[in-house]
Length: 617
Ligand SMILES: *[C@@H]1O[C@H](CO)[C@@H](O)[C@H](O)[C@H]1NC(C)=O
Ligand SMILES: *[C@@H]1O[C@H](CO)[C@@H](O)[C@H](O)[C@H]1NC(C)=O
Ligand SMILES: *[C@@H]1O[C@H](CO)[C@@H](O)[C@H](O)[C@H]1NC(C)=O
Ligand SMILES: *[C@@H]1O[C@H](CO)[C@@H](O)[C@H](O)[C@H]1NC(C)=O
Ligand SMILES: *[C@@H]1O[C@H](CO)[C@@H](O)[C@H](O)[C@H]1NC(C)=O
Ligand SMILES: *[C@@H]1O[C@H](CO)[C@@H](O)[C@H](O)[C@H]1NC(C)=O
Image 1 (tube, rainbow, N blue to C red):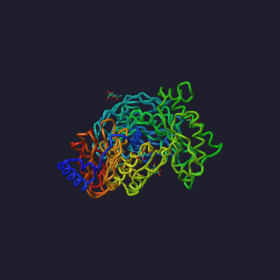
Image 2: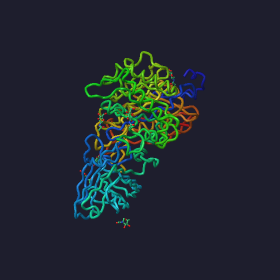
Image 3: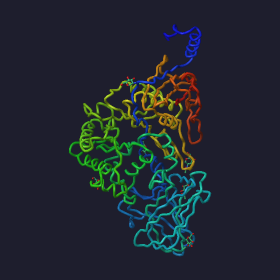
């Protein structure tokens, strides 16, 4: 501004005009030097298999209760076809992990089709690709088993495949078959296996662990459901925190996530998405794994009594075994087990989190001791691993944290609460890196626009401080609309093959995560933060300016980036603070526009309640 005196009258007039224009709006000038390196991980995912986010969700297997597992197995989701009855059978176990099979009793003189049906998880998403079915069968049968996918109520066939089977009543015979499908208009579809009743009349058939998979994400065996994996992939996240969460802790010690029961052939597992599958997910989606390990603390109702002292030792040992399974070579006991299970190379694990939310439910007092026990043992065996404490609350942590350790901070908050946190990270001690392992707006059924903009403000606060805030994961991630206890979620879905509901928060995550620079650049402005917030970064000549308008009025902004001539602006907005994408309407979606810069200056308008990214080069 002092340079006005040195300019010609003409230039001064135009500069004055410029100042006048700026007085109407907000002007930002992005520095092209200085600044801090941004964390390369920054945005990613937290996943736990609860509330049908895994079973019935991203895990590709589509049949419910397919292993008749649990302490009281029943016929949930199963039905019968024709002149026959079905029952849970405990005299013909498939394996020690799957101790029950599904028995089909066919009376003497039966004819016509007899068989079993499975209704899936509130239906089955049939997308027109080739499906795979796998099952074990026991009983005297030399003939065809017909596998079908059928509209419930309409009888329309979306698949029908005859599978030649030669089975006996001494042992289970394994069957696998490809089932070509045609796309169903909705999720109201069931699965059926049937045989000609006259072949079995007066006898029984036993079915063990019946599985149905669509064409999975990246064609991975035992892999992910493609529609949901693709929606996650397009966020371009950098990490995956698993297996939870409350899912890791379990309702008690016996129900914690036991890593060694989730590996190897599925017929030898009592349930749960497996350790190796999580790592394949990371590999296929280019995510850095963050493995949560159980640290002696469960979610006992009425308050937990954490395990401490010598009693903790076997659990520390168990985690060392788990890490050997993940990281060891084939000369180690557990590394060799991983190789035997089909994975030759160690998994590229660099981050381990010790426990989950140990500041809650009676975990705090003993966490310093438990954290230290696990930290010391893991750090000694694997000094290069980054170890993360499950809380940032200093009263639960050792009085001095080991160098290189990180802390996990969770923040479910109201929209105003998230905006109120904007400055929080500015004031952190730079020596203790933060992972925001779970966070989101709370208190609504579906993410609302105001909340999604508040999330953008919160993320701007994170990104400005991404020298110390290393990673942040929106949670929870996935919701089956038909059976939800915890809302809101980033992505919702039904079993209709085309029904993936990308919420307003999903689009904010996507535009913020997919557009990241490696260096955070300072922005100078004569305006204060609020209602408009901003942060800038760049990689080489590409600049990213993220903006949020947490207000009900349109704002005009000019952004100056020296040397840039063109830019793409992507805006996620809705005038209605309460607008939400739901299972019945889509009100929010990103809108792109091209801008050209005059002397590196771009003028743009930010609609009410908006989050935006300007990518300039
Ligand atoms: C870099 O980090 C320091 C704190 O360590 C902070 O004061 C400064 O504002 C940061 N610079 C940028 C461009 O974010
Ligand atoms: C759903 O999530 C909530 C919140 O964590 C949990 O209390 C509940 O047990 C979960 N239900 C199922 C079926 O996973
Ligand atoms: C059809 O849908 C109804 C209602 O959801 C369900 O009770 C029934 O079990 C389904 N039929 C089959 C064969 O799965
Ligand atoms: C599941 O929920 C969707 C709406 O979200 C609904 O259209 C569908 O009929 C429901 N399915 C069942 C089996 O209830
Ligand atoms: C089994 O199905 C195949 C193909 O549909 C058919 O050719 C064959 O005759 C069937 N066999 C019996 C025993 O029904
Ligand atoms: C898993 O590990 C625990 C503790 O080391 C052990 O007691 C249990 O038998 C193991 N389970 C399997 C299936 O190997």
